[in-house]
Length: 553
Image 1 (tube, rainbow, N blue to C red):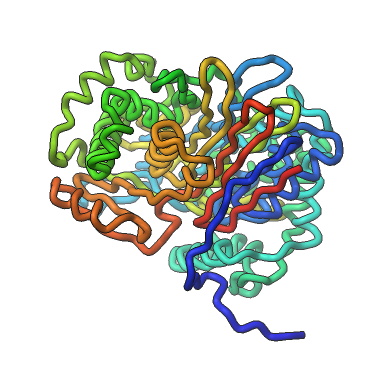
Image 2 (cartoon, rainbow, N blue to C red):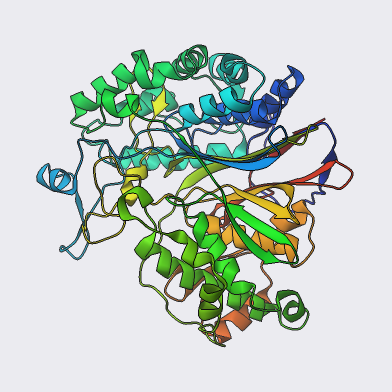
């Protein structure tokens, strides 16, 4: 066997991608095996909904660094049968047995460096909330799919049982996660993670073949029971037993009570007949729409021709203004009564636009955290188009793997506040502020297509940039994704990637932005996009910053 001596992450020369066209089916994912799984569902006679479920389940196997069976999920889709846009919120609540008082009394809170404030931990059982992803697969399959759930999940089961080859970026993030869990594993609480996701403590390298047999069995059980095993039967009882044994709060009753919610997507009339659509809170899709609501008050395309740096400045200030409002208001509307519609009024956008001057200003002192997520989208020849996202939140999530199941549980509850005066304060049965957001574009009442950018609090920032690239600057999906990105971090601090024009970065610095450059492409999100043409054909772009791939017919 030939020994190949090269670094798969070393890119000495910039690659160039063109948009891909298809007319029967298109599946865009952050890992090529997942795109192939979606295409297999189409070839079996399924539609775009079967494809998205197949690809999403496959991603729990072939990209466990960002999502898993223990993840949450959201979806926006155009149903060709119903001729309407639909939304699904499958984010799980906090356990009924948890509370601010109990977390503090049990000594599970983390004390900040100032020694005065306490926050939710990021690792262990405490931040684990009810996983929503399996319920999302079952709901989408039952209402809109053509195949059985078992058929949709078959490619994922095969990857987990018989193995798949690890891609370069996946290997890189896998190794990073192992370092973090090793540092926090003095008490052995992450031993199951190491047994499941490493080989004697070694993480897989690019080209290694990985099998996840327990994961395969759990996926098979979910498929055979339409996810009931996960929420009401054997798997649910195993999760309950593991939580009790470790002093966690999640119980069988929390799982059995969970149901995903069909919701009406939010829509913002941006400009020239274009609508940008997002899932309503508890997700942060409202942040993207709030920023676009502000930015539609400026002549973006006209300004870009003479002063592109001014466009970037206004985008950044709009994001800062909207995060300042969102941090104080967005949470579970069932608990807070939060009415997001006021943020989508012309008056809100006009008022905030008047606050944007020529220089950078600090709008909030809050600091967003980082996370890992998978975004995927697909379309079929019948007219169905699906925008879907699922996440364990921070990498593999809580670090907790339920023994005998392969299930890595999310740590979404880490975003809850332990300050009872906060909108996002922890309460039993409450859903937290959620970072993952699928996007969708409409024009003149017709569906154009799905788009999304994954990556924690970068997501609404990425949505704003990609949507404006397509709408204001007329970019095709691939160029809209490839365009250099910026990211607001905190205060006036922001970051740009290496491909960002240095003259624009200097101009932003002169306007008062504290600009740094990051060599880490994952810092700026990873996206996918599909647009349907008047001919009925579809054109797609896939993220050049990771292992992404498009499978199409």
